[in-house]
Amino acid sequence: MALVAEMPNRINVSDFNLACTLECGQAFRWSRSADGWFEGVVGKEIWHLRQPSPGVVAAAVPAAGITRYLSLDVSLADILASFPDDPHLLQAAKDHAGLRVIRQEPWECLASFIASSSKQIVQIRQIVRLLSERFGEPIDDTHHTFPTASAIARASHQQLWDCKLGFRAKNLLAAAQMIDSGKLDLNGLQSMEYDRALEELIKLPGVGEKIANCTLLFSCGFNHAFPIDVWIERSLRRIYFPRKKRVTARDLRAFTRTHFGPYAGWAQQYLFFSERTWKDGPS
DNA sequence: TGCCAGGCCTGTC
DNA sequence: GACAGGCATGGC
Image 1 (cartoon, chains in turn cyan, blue, purple):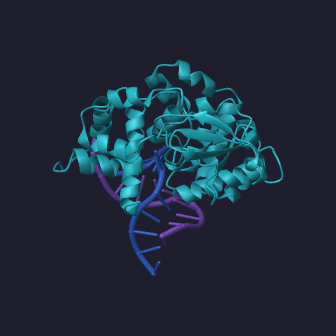
Image 2 (cartoon, helix red, strand yellow):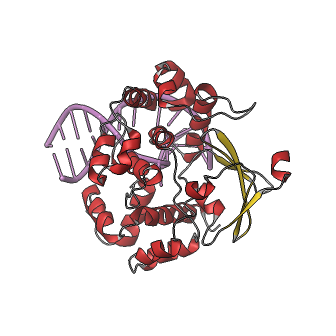
Image 3 (tube, rainbow, N blue to C red):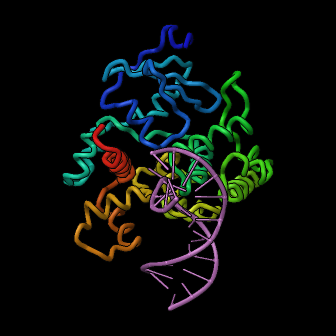
């Protein structure tokens, strides 16, 4: 990777773990090479990032947006201090110290999670790669931007199906067409009240509370949005309702809206990553 | 080979 | 409101 060998910028960071942040399942276009560099496409740029030591991020990219994208401008100490006195959560935050919720582009985030429905992360990454290769703009010989809603809206159902979307193809197509036609302004969501933004997103086909909350948390700045997927649901039931047999989705939603505080979404990421790595065995 | 995956939608009770 | 079944496909 010749580019990377050329004098990367060095950014001083505290309370930050690059690998945790990029590999915890919130974004799908990052890959790590054997020499420790992470490569990803952000907007129209190809970024190369590495963390040679805990307090430093090396960035071989012309990107002033790194601090914003990685949420390096927020105090993780303040976020952790806002968490409830909850030993399970505090342990998860300790196990994955430095994990931050990053700030993604709303359409890419929404589209990726529409594709994620009942899919494994490895498959989601493949779908996102195929969509980018076939409908994104080329950046160089091997990299493409994530396709715009307009580009997806102009695709045929069969073309999207061929990107391994399966039954999700019609949802992604319809959602792209609604956004392309202006029926929903994704960039306006962040200035709405949370409940209203959630309501707007759920109008899109193939978007329920889980995908809407992922979009609001990972790309619209709603730090308390708490996506409940199969992993988190399993974790919540085991940790917080161990002896209660009848726990409905409504019960879980009510619990997560009150227990975790204003940065519930960050808490969710710690619990999510813990649940996955716990299942996979000690790392 | 069979289960299950960062769900959503519809019908039924 | 709660719950079951269907939807496509592929990793493990």
